[in-house]
Length: 220
Image 1 (spheres, rainbow, N blue to C red):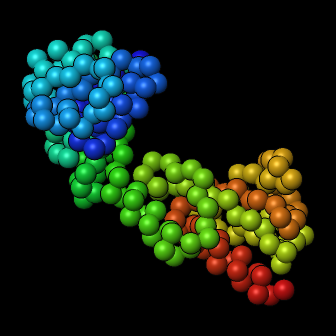
Image 2: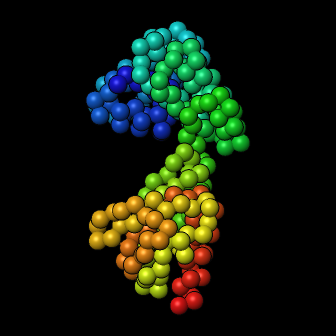
Image 3: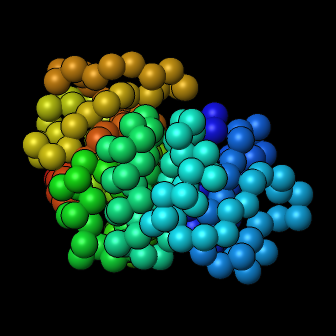
């Protein structure tokens, strides 16, 4: 894959190096050549100093023939414009932008740009750890709006049916793992102590589900 990384700060340099180590052709663009010092010494991708708003700079970086572009500077305006140009003008199939300020994330979504908001995701993840330190998140989609959770089934919920446990419409069962083997759940599936119930849920959904499971345990 031929990839362009716009922005060589902490995120951009780490991303560029990760891609390079995986064997991809990587070009890095930044308006300050001092930021290239963030890259490890063994990085052998191409470096381009210049303003990414200047299409000549992007042309030198190979935008006409690249497969992917990530705009990951700390400027939302720059990331939005570069990502939009890459998607609309050059028809790059895989364009990702970093969202620095969550309050302007809507603009990225309006333009249909795949966006990663480390601020929004990080804040939600920290909130989860603070409010439920025993929770286990195994996958995060988007910027944490929907996540995949593993819920261990305690002895107090042994022999409960899935329909008894899942009463929230923003929390959906995905799988039941028993003795290391996963299966697709049905509403009448009976859970056993020690099972792992995998669910997809919003943050509000997993909170309501955990509260419901705790209430069921107290009834026993």
